Amino acid sequence: MTETTPAAVRVRFCPSPTGNPHVGMIRTALFNWAFARHHGGTFVFRIEDTDSARDSEESYQALVDALRWLGLDWDEGPEVGGPFGPYRQSERLEIYADVARRLAEGGYAYPCYCTPDELAGRREAALAAGRTPGYDGHCRDLSADQIAAFAAEGRTPALRFRMPDTDFTWDDAVRGPLHVGADHVPDFVLVRGNGEPLYTLVNPVDDALMQITHVLRGEDLLSSTPRQLALYDALRAIGVTDRPTPQFGHLPYVMGEGNRKLSKRDPESSLGMYVAQGYLPEGLVNYLALLGWSIGEDREFFSKEEMAEHFDISRVTPNPARFDLKKCTAIDGDWIRHLSEAEVAARLVPYLQGEGLLSEPPTAEQERLLGEVVPLIHTRMDTLGQAAPMIAFLFTDDAAFTVDPADAAKVLGEGSGEVLAAARSSLAAIPEWSTPAIEAGLRGALIDGLGLKPKVAFGPVRVAVSGRRVSPPLFESLELLGRDRTLARLDAALAG
Image (cartoon, rainbow, N blue to C red; front, side, top):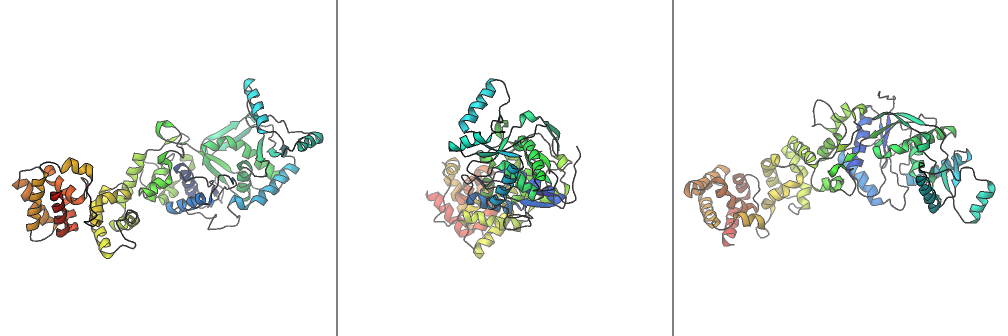
């Protein structure tokens, strides 16, 4: 299979604003973006919002925000404009009505008066007879009297495309040469009886008018390709476009648990989950790029710019790709460690504000503490969201400070009082409040003085002061917390 690339590549990402963005959708956007950037082409962002019953403005804004957050900039589309706008299909209805009329006048489409019950009945009969189910052409050649009779019944016709009696072949950019027989592609509806245009019409019309050269989309849309090929021929015949048919490339499914297609209902499919839990956009983009494509040489860590530099559609596999949340999280951790400590601190601010740990804007003291604690946790995080539980003790007033009950039950039980008392006594006596002095004091009192092993010695102190068994390194944490606050928390633990 050879990739053919015109001088001016134009690709599009055209989601419907229904529900929240999901990772399969974003993977499609990413591959289109990378293809356009690799070839110096144009990435068009188009909103397919002709389904008035399901589309929402909230979902539209979520789509825009998602691409902005991921850094997938578009060259034409909402908020950017372009020469082929508008880029929301709800604002292009007059265009679709005109094209539908011209298709009907040219004999490429016809009115269909069949009711849903009639269609279902004939489908069941076809299945019972062993025939391929699908529209049987019942209204293809109605006489004027038949049309008048239907109209007298009050039936409102849909507009159905007249498929040619020919087989279809095309060279898929991902799957290679494909062939579909004419008997598997029945006539299909372009416009509902209420005048609402369907995806089957608006999508190819916009691709033609926006001069799209490559259609890279999900495998679930593969079966609609013959219909679009036929419609493109009709659009050229009636003068809507003189552009060649785009090259199609169908991206592999993204599979979830149990080797089934990842759906919007799966928790790991929601982009919002990754934003809320503090995944980096760089990390998520990096992982999604690996779902069906490889940069080569067993390399798994790269930026979206590096992806664009190396992106070759022929390296996209047609085989399903499995979404592995653990691997996604691990790659995100690699990206956190790739960032500088100052950058990590800056990106943590909104998450800590969301947890009520930082003010808006942060105070100078909060900024100082954050800057000093990030080096202690930089290599311990896989997501930004993991930081808040680890460092909350530093940003929580003593009056509001609490100890995790489960951790307290495991560590602050019988016998911990002696440990905490010895720790408090030694810490109160050290001359300077520094990490080396704190470590020397606690080791002398608990390991040398009480003969305890480090885990047994330091566990109660960690939980009493940080509230959790998992925290940044203990001695450094106590230095950041300060002498007074450390002693006050040990006192509270002893009193409790």
